[in-house]
Image 1: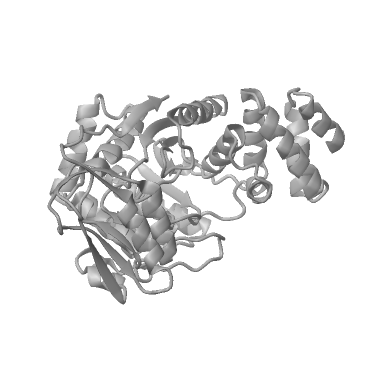
Image 2: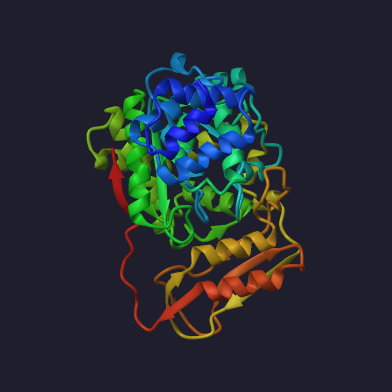
Length: 435
């Protein structure tokens, strides 16, 4: 078999078989095939595409390229969640302790560091003083056995071929194609070992994929891969045109998540969090109806059980659980700037991408994985979609340390807010469920 023949075959719009895909994945991982040859193949795939068989073969080859975390000893109900990324997306921080509070479920979350405008889940948890995100496999498994919940950074031993191929895609403009996106996401989720996986696939100006159509195709592709590889995967397609919740920025988002677990829930966060949880929990058969799941969630939050589980998790991973009652322990910024409305009316839109860009100017995100980010900077939306505002009333607060890019951040936040004279219609954030 020859990599040049595979490149030529793909150029001719022919499908690669399983043996051919395993050959190029393993050959590249082992250094037997050159970067420039895989780059040519990726570009051919970018223009020609891959069918579902090829995409499944690619996913399996990347799973098999490294360690597969064995969680079988933990029982039949090990749950994981993945989001395709969004602005103010703090859902995982509520999802994990809520699911762990609902019975026989264990929530095993391996996460990478966030690239782009704001940090990822690992970064948000690292804003808790002392919190350890680098658990060994044994520590991860033992914690799941003891308290049903664990979070750790994803190791390079899980789907290493995906990591190497993604790095090449990133510098060859071949990231944004659905078969490669789907295989990348699903390979890491399967290698992480959970038997039930829920995917939050976002669309809109603040998401990686902007159209409902493309988000739906991606969701269907990932769910189908799961079926073919005997994994229970459900995808929820959700709107990411506006920021989720009020807080954008790492420690700010964690504080909002804690407030959520105390029962103080913005409507948008509640809709998506409850939808994701009820959708995957119903798949297990442990609850009969969505109403049963929602009632159980409400009771767990009202009783304080969810917050207790979150506290236990923080303690188990060496974090300071006093942050749950004393938010000053997160630290703060040197400066705060309050933006005020320039007119009367209602908030009819908050452009998620502009808010994200503002956060990046402040230092909340990274371009490269080794970039250092500022965990305390960010933006708090004092007003959100549909809120009535008066002229000179606060609409947003910017938390910042560095004056260097403040004016650019300020401009983006101001431009993000749009007004109308009438109250806008109610938004529905959950577009579709694919299973």
